[in-house]
Amino acid sequence: MIPVPQEPLALLTADSERNLDVLRRGLRRASSFAFHVVLASDAARAEVLRRLRAWSGSGGVPELRFFAKGEDGAGEVARLLAVSDRRHPLAGAVIPDGVALVEADGGAVVASLNMARDVLGKLICGPLVLVIAADRAAELWAIAPDLYDVRAATLEIASMPRDPAPTLALDLEEGGVTQVRSRAELQVEAARLRAFADDEIPAGALADAWIRLGRAFFDAAELGEARAAAEEARRLAEGVGYTSGVGDALSLEAQVLEKTGPAEAWEQALQRTLALRREAGEPVRLAADLRRLGRAVALLGRLEEAEGLLREAVALYEQLGDVRGRAIVMWGVADILEHRGQLDEALRIRQQEVLPVHERLERQTG
Image (cartoon, rainbow, N blue to C red; front, side, top):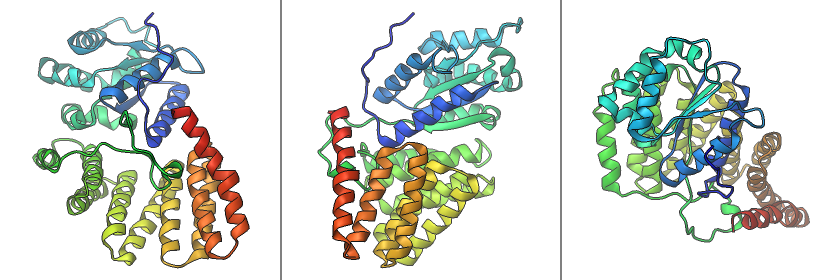
């Protein structure tokens, strides 16, 4: 057995930690074949694999068979698909190197995996996790569109830079520091995505790729490109009834509109996003969008409405067990109370409910 390192190999963003919680719950609940795609590269990928090895065979997660990396792993997957005796399926499996799988034999192994979609449950009776870099995922779906249709989840995991700049009070607005990519690099990726015809890969997968690219443009302060990417993602997602993707695209549009205006369009995008989150039953995203809308409404001067939205977000974060998310929202509640002149209660929230969380998280990551 390969020893599992006890210490983290990378510090992950808060959103990534939440996504890993979703993955772990999915692995525990998989009573039959369930396909999970994890988008991660470099240090984040190493940390994902460390977690998967630590979870394997414990806490309700089935024993996971880890395929090798590189060409050897692609060969192992091909041999699994060729097995004729299917009376002894694997309890679960991990393909740690999706890029190598895509590149092996010109994509032939992925094509075989796609063709075997309907019999994978006889080869693996539990979860199958495939880890691949986000910028190569579109190639995977171009070869394996049928496999994409049966995925249980697609989760993106990203690491923090090794030496993040100091942040104030939990980095209270958004969840972590991201690595900014150059405008030229992002435009190359945009051109590659535009080269795909709508029917070459599933529209949902292409929408996800545009959303990731739009966020990267936003981080690089390329707001026009970010909004164009969000609009393309929304067009693709609406065309196939991909509610979660429409919500993600609208959320990105709202981030751009917050900086560019007009304020009415910003609020409208957030309201539409929130309605879609409620429809889709996505508590993690719903909580985050309640927080964003609450902040927007507060900035527009409607403090009572804003507090109601933030209090709803607090309740959701409590249900999710997300202490960091709750602390972020409580800081916003304290701001509203301060504007109303309730200074003692605002101070109490900051001193007793927010700063202790910040200090505890700093100790854990320091």
